[in-house]
Length: 333
Image 1 (cartoon, helix red, strand yellow):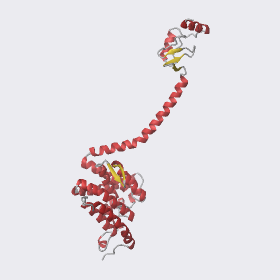
Image 2 (spheres, one colour):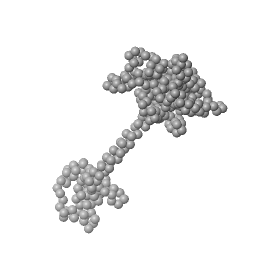
Image 3 (cartoon, rainbow, N blue to C red):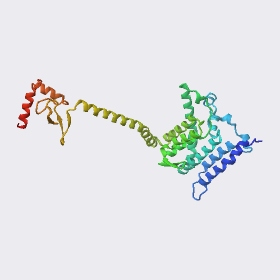
Image 4 (tube, rainbow, N blue to C red):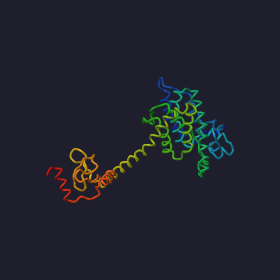
């Protein structure tokens, strides 16, 4: 004889089921609307497991006997925890959010790929997401972090995030909670949304779901389906680094300009062309001249002109009278 639902869950069912029913009517009710049967069956199965109505309660395992725990699964080979934990939910909000996401994502995928392929995808994502969660938890344990390895968890979130990744690879833009966003970011937004409204959600399980979606695409379609996604993610991640590099380059350019201004003050714009002014006689010379046309002083920025000047015997400094005499000769004075 079944124990039936507790009074708390009965009260919540009275509030939640009508909302879920409205969403399903919006999806399945309009004429000509797609009516994916497996998505509806998955929602019904999760609802029966969570609310445990009537005699069904006696035939379903208790939550504590099926919660996902990497330590117990690896130690005892407990496959019941490995598979059934995905259909159990820890809280009312957790259940409602997952079912709303399943209705939205599952309906699109099942309609586009067909029910047989959709069923194979769900089974694959279930095994892959749970498997990646085990690997990640074991890896963290080997690094000295044992929290995830001994932590209990349950829920369909890992499979849903894997489904989001698969959906993202098929679409350009998606409507995410009423907002149009690029499809490649939808899974990450879904992950942030889950942890914003349910901080106790198991992060490792959700990351395992995203990895499961990527692995499914790799196994099903090959690397060509993943290449555009990874290139877009790499571009987005590289933008902060590019911005910082541009700032550093601008700062270095500013410092270099100021240094050049102090090191070579003899070069400045005169008239319409670029000319340089001799530091000895203040004569304006062409930028192509290596030595001053008046006093043969070498250009300060041309290293080879110093050697030329010395070879021509210009290492002796000119007297003031000789400089005045050369000026008169140049201007015909």
